[in-house]
Length: 475
Image (cartoon, rainbow, N blue to C red; front, side):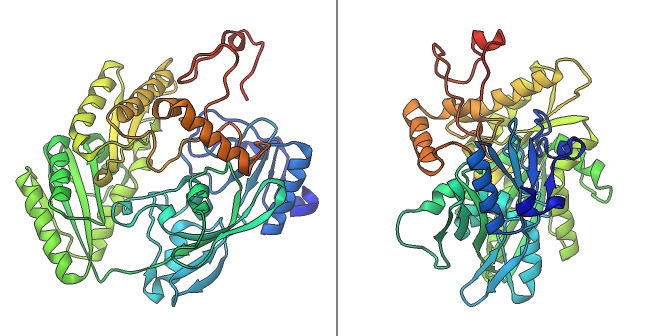
């Protein structure tokens, strides 16, 4: 591998390999066999060819900010890290697209093209550091996905390295390419079908006007009613976010300049578009919020004030580290009409096991991000936190939702796939995987439940007796 990427871009020392043992989900660490940092599509293809010939698993990695263990290594694998490939290859304002390498950070694209009056819409909370390649793999969303959609809605084309090192181009620069929607299969495939080395993204014109309001409520019940009322009124906000009391406490501990009051919940909403429409929509949304029991409504007086409000929201995940030694980030989806009920049930489940849960989420599309707080120094708390997280995801599925909205399934949530999908669905997914990666070399052990040992029962994974006895292993 060193002959392909250069000795300095081939990491073999154990002390250096530990950096790549996990992604943003820090538990369940696995030391990779080798880490390579290719600098071009051709180098990625050669690495894949060598690894394939040697029968070595391949785990693609972006910035390592994922929260479901999607970039977690498997024993003996080669981790292909794309952080060196971060160039903008082409900008075309006339046709509204930008072609980039996968290692570039999400926000850097907008920063580099802002002078032209354009921006890239998907905005994960980690957009300052998360890579476009990782966004492609996980189909990342963000606060503004309610109106503007997820990564899949903004990818026009991609160049990928597939099984055996074959380089293929999918899609193009047109808004809708003819033929099968292969991009729809590849975006969100979590690195299991190939490695994207160039990605063509749709650019949007900056809206004429954006109006933001920040509203406080006695509890998440009233805030949830406000969200439902705003959407039911035919208003489509660019974003509408909710944080509960514990998340507010964390944000204030993290950003001392926040002057948010001690309340049960806050809503943060953006409306954007033509000025006349935005003024009307924002005023109507404020009226609905007040009618649902808002204690206070703030309209930022400057762009700096507006950015501070959003900084408080986007810092929420990191901020929880100020009030808890450790936490798990879950990512379930529910119908938005069930927000108040689900948050009450989460609170009850957390109290039953003696844990706390901070809630911060994309309220407009019901994408919850419960942060389960625990302390690894307290025996049994990690296990309680994991069980509580599992119970929350099952609650989401039970109410007609999903186990993930934007963080992916990865290694952490594959056990819950059988709660959402039947055997035929899972077999079909496996057939797609086998069609594009017949040897299962790319990111093995992710997303799809582990094939059953003889005699196992269907459903979420339970260790087989011979596995417990140390006579068999899962792969």
